[in-house]
Image 1 (cartoon, one colour):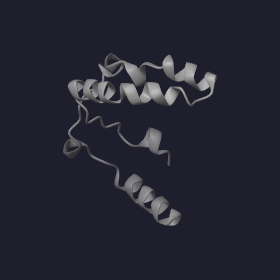
Image 2 (spheres, rainbow, N blue to C red):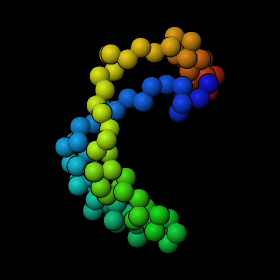
Image 3 (cartoon, rainbow, N blue to C red):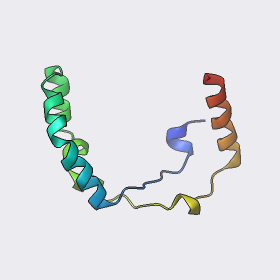
Image 4 (cartoon, rainbow, N blue to C red):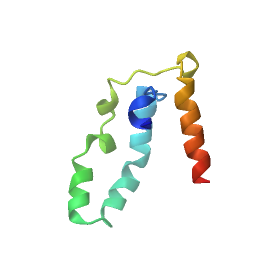
Length: 85
């Protein structure tokens, strides 16, 4: 079981919410960059997921109540979570 590929991709944030989140955290993210190694700073600075709400423009908001989950996958996930406790 691979959670990344076996479960449906659900997206709950609207475009305006994404823009607000990015704007709200921009100053803190810039401050954080000052404490990171140069290679990581460069990587984050050039990663639009941190700075550009348009990166997420193609995401469609999904109502999770409309998604059918495979019971077998849910049971496997539940068992995996139990085994980590």
